[in-house]
Image (cartoon, rainbow, N blue to C red; front, top):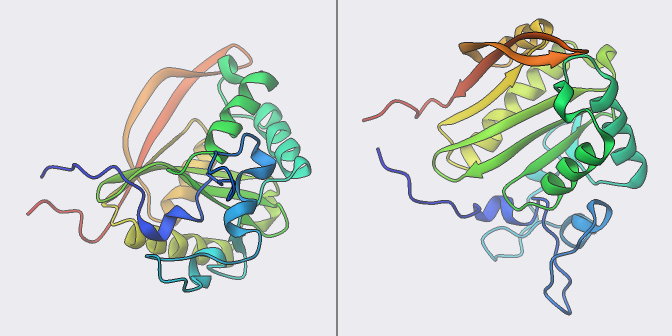
Length: 219
């Protein structure tokens, strides 16, 4: 099977991270501004039809399109810096973290959703239409984890994979709890990288995870 399409699916174009200035057509530079041009007025155009795609903006009660604000970016950066196993030691620097967040929030190959009232973030990065993407799942408030979040997370992944015609979503974690949580929403262990992750200078293994669509079998 050969994959040659790397463009953004029409259903993702206006909900991804890249916002454009309507007057200059220049990409906006800050995470705070990146999405406002495309979703600030709660409209997403699909296939140029001007239709409102509420399913992608507000897919379920717990999930809404992530709109980066100063407060949310700072909260997410603090979580990535301090939460055990969120980032390996070499990335635990606020300058690096903000650079990573800026890259993701201004990319048109990424899409992010807020869980509840900033209880967490779920997103896809490096989306290649018709093929694959990478998943990011961070819980800022572990208390939100439960049957409802499991059910809605599975449904959101199904929606995004169907929209992008994705046959695989990959992820990885050094946290055994996150690995078990990921299994509940459809991810399987594909392998283990030993001594790949470091937390407070203590190396540990990383679980390589994959989630496959029902159309993933090669014909």
